[in-house]
Length: 96
Image (cartoon, rainbow, N blue to C red; front, side, top):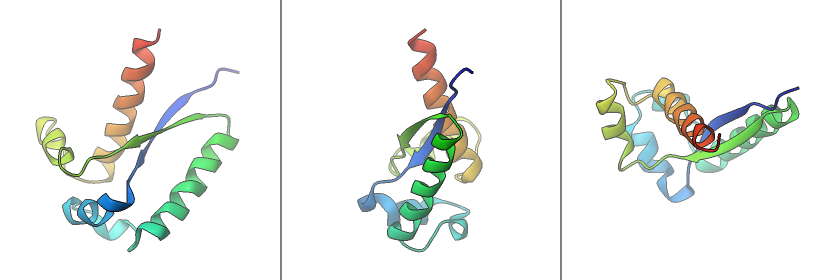
């Protein structure tokens, strides 16, 4: 079985409030970093248990809106997923 690397957006505690403020779908994010971290760790563990190599991809709230704009994306969950997936694809493509 081939191990599949997947990207998972990760936040720093000091950035969480700003991240919530820039996201157009901020209502989908937990109110606090502690709640988000608990959910994120559960998701991380589930993916790992399924045999995935999970890469934590840290999102910078100062540069993410421009990254989205360059790609014509809203600053939302879809963009966060795309960001993480592009990061992992680029990392592992360069290791081939």
